[in-house]
Length: 220
Image (cartoon, rainbow, N blue to C red; front, side):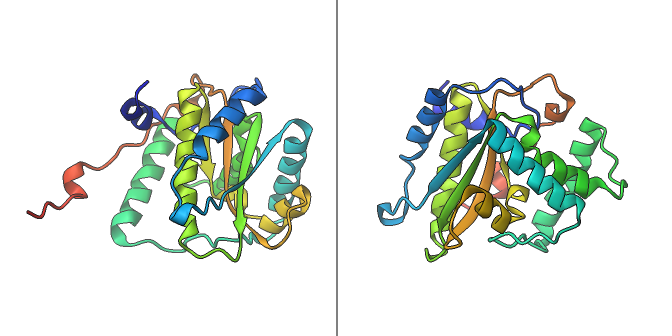
């Protein structure tokens, strides 16, 4: 597929097949993503790929913390509020996804169920964690966005599915302890990766985008 098709057809996958991805394909995805631009070519990304028993063990740790109602403490705080325009888009997303997936938005356990699915990495055979030195300036997070997008597009070009996960960073200290990552590192993002189960209801919903006229202003 060409670049335009790759960008427009990439989607977040929330149910994966159990089949593992060959290591050479995962390395090719990372090798492609590392060519992302970064401020002054600083290339701040550090990548950990989890598979097999190690991934499952971390998943159980995270789920256990959730079930104990341990307070999340991500290295990058979760937004507590949004401007009205973005808030409306979020509400629209939740409503349409619930309708497509049969989710009850009035379920008092809905957030916990969503987080449990996140901590299970949606059944993916591999989980990717992105880290950076905590002393890096805020601008480096923009570089991570570029890297993460490149990674997900490269994965899509290989027939793989991905989903970027903020919730996967909820218990940052516990993740770093399990992975033997020093506290001097900041946990930026989690990404589940594997072959998508396109027949699953969890993947039935596809988000839309606003028209270009809503986001572009022409000045001549």
